[in-house]
Image (tube, rainbow, N blue to C red; front, side, top):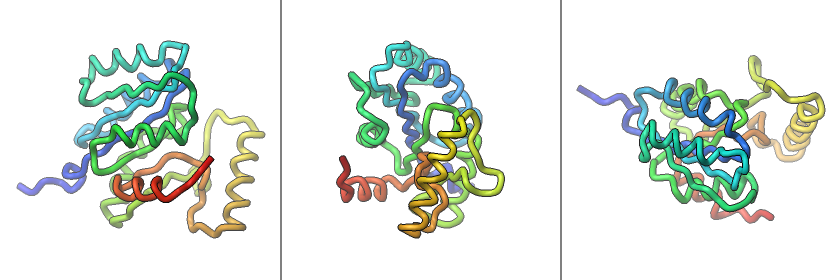
Length: 187
């Protein structure tokens, strides 16, 4: 019997956290619920949360398995971009998913990301808030305007061909993400 294509690919899901004790268990549960037949690991990069996030992740690791839930803690808050880079250093699978821990990136869409990548062979699949049916929940008007404004400005100046440059819900081929990170200089 031929193995399904998505079962051949393996995924490292990187989730940066800071004070996400109340969200992380739900996110992990939803990932397992929506990716039952997919091989993956979840890498939680916690930036020294004082609220007990790391203790919750350790409990989740004992429940789901230390090979499935990896805590890669840092001593203090060092920022989102460096958290993704830190997580990538610990990723063992051939595809990388980055997502936030705010529950604004619902794990139910991970299956669609995987399907889109398999159909197209794309090196990057990105989620967007700015298409029909897209959006965010729980943001105040100022945050929505700031995000939308940044994306309109980027669209006008850069013509990137994607509708959401400020979101961080993406699937990458690991080698492509490593190449991107190694070629970008950022402060």
